[in-house]
Image 1 (cartoon, helix red, strand yellow):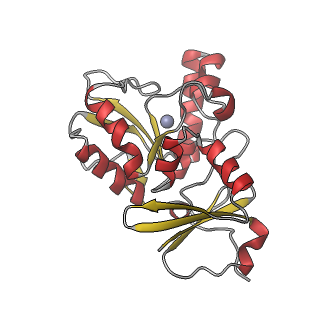
Image 2 (cartoon, rainbow, N blue to C red):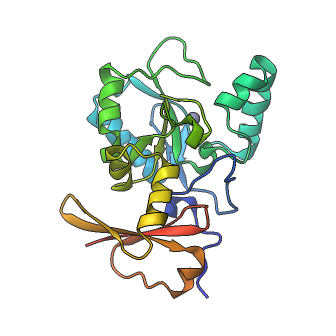
Length: 243
Ligand SMILES: [Zn+2]
């Protein structure tokens, strides 16, 4: 029987990882440098390709720097422990995800900084104007969203983080941006509105249909043509078809 368990992260760009939805057991992503100049900052391969393309399109080479990408469980634990002893519990709870519950462990999240002599590793400066502003305006086109926006703290459970971007892929990022939805809200919208009737949109030259399914429906699914099946880590999966 076909099963959803153990699929690789790169096949699951809509995976929700948070304090209430810890990283599921799945094969680790295949990684690539987020920027060839900073090879130690890595992302899931497709996310890395799209990030580089977006920085290039924004004219941000050497002006936008990747600060932190994929993290292992041990690295997330180390960041948690170090921040806790340096900054205390309130700050740590606000800005550092609990080990096992960080999006950075998927390889789909990246912290970015405007180039500067001194960069804050936990809260890098990534302004809304200049080249960083251009990057923001183009990010959705390349599949990225600002994951923790202001005003949505009660939904994401994380303080506003202007520097933290998450790869969810195209066209999902564009739909989320257009309707100002966080990943939590987008997944809920698909689950509530598009289980029986797919969401249909035009994306470039393609007609794209997006439909939500419960996990138990996976074995009976027929997936022909160009499609992507992404688990949501909340008991379901989303199938995106391009025609
Ligand atoms: Zn981050």
